[in-house]
Length: 322
Length: 248
Ligand SMILES: Nc1ncnc2c1ncn2[C@@H]1O[C@H](COP(=O)(O)OP(=O)(O)OP(=O)(O)O)[C@@H](O)[C@H]1O
Ligand SMILES: [Mg+2]
Image (cartoon, each protein chain N blue to C red):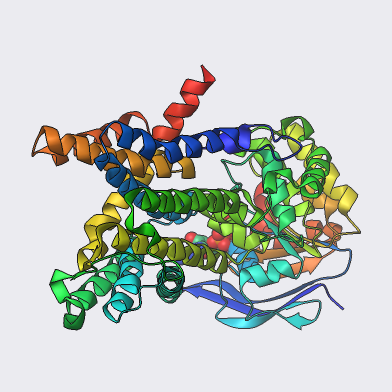
């Protein structure tokens, strides 16, 4: 949990070689899958990368900020409808709808966060859940845009009028870029002066106020940033499935995202990203083995919670430390 | 002008009047000690001065400015620093990072999002200097949660010092510290005396009489006596109400 604090800081920022290698390997993966005739896995991994964006965004408030947000799916579904609704009106330009998705989700985060962040603990969980459900039911009532059934998009967002992302490899690389960018941003913010205040407020809120930090404001900024990234993930999800539905905003999704962060090790943004990818792959593999795969997955999550509380990130650190 | 002036401060918890029309001042350079039996309302008074608890009536002035309506963080930003009776450090940060974070509150980059806080040489140097002052230089890299209780008391003081406070509120800073640590903390505060005004709550009478310019006695939410330490020591009413049990 405090690994970052214990490693001695080098004088200058070393290039994160491990990260560059991982991104390079992920970037080459589609070529390998196509060569092996397993192009389907490109789609699975794209989905994993989209959820990785969401999970890493959630990690900022949940892992770093200690705020158990149980309504994160609202940001996703708002981002998805910020693609779907314009699409319905023939606006398919990604350079318009992606920023729109991020702005809409960030605004929602600001408005609801300003209320929710006045509460603590279980009340915060309940109020974020309630806001999430409000969005969910509001969208099911939007009959113009498919209501309960959602909307099929018949295509993906364009870039400057070009259909760049119709190709599944191109779309995969877009998702990889979004995930890598989110990882770099959340990691940088977490290690910054701002991030130290966010983390300090998690450890001892009363102490932070006595030091002169406006904890509410810091948390609200983090919440809005996290919401914006959640909106981005939602916009990507709409493109991935070429479909939007209120179901993206269901509380199950919020719960799964929390599972991804916990699986990844809670305090590690890298862990949260891999937790999401791992979950997408496991879902695929296990659902082929048995129709009761959710039980297997549940057992796995219980195992991590009991045996390896620092999750993937902790296991990796121990393996490195040997 | 007084650094701190409180006027008619009153706080009730249900039927219990914990602060009953308390007025007191801390003058520039002064160490004003506040003593009183357990449950007298000392910590609650400190919390109202710091802004963690809102009074039902009365005013709090810092350097003449009425801060009664200001939130806690805004008062801290005006130079109020505080140590907690119950140790309040960041257990998963190192000792150095605890103090650096305290210094960060007054730094231009306090909320900067694109920097590596742990590599802020200015904050780390200020932290190391403050840790040296309280005798914790050798423990800078240790997680605060793993420090001994007495060391955590010292860490609290270092966190207060590094903020360059205009007024220091100390709520039993020696509580639970060993004899050596208590002596070191008294020496540290003695060096600050004259430069940093303090409101000192302390049960350790040795510390009170070594440091205080003035002593006020709080009993059941009321100030029953204020004066020079010798006068307070000799005051029969005070002895009856409080010192009698310990100074006998
Ligand atoms: N939040 C609260 N709600 C109700 N009662 C409280 C609250 N905080 C304090 N009290 C009561 O107010 C009284 C004064 O408490 P306070 O902690 O201020 O005393 P103190 O002088 O600091 O005592 P000690 O020497 O033990 O630290 C006590 O009777 C306590 O039980
Ligand atoms: Mg007390």
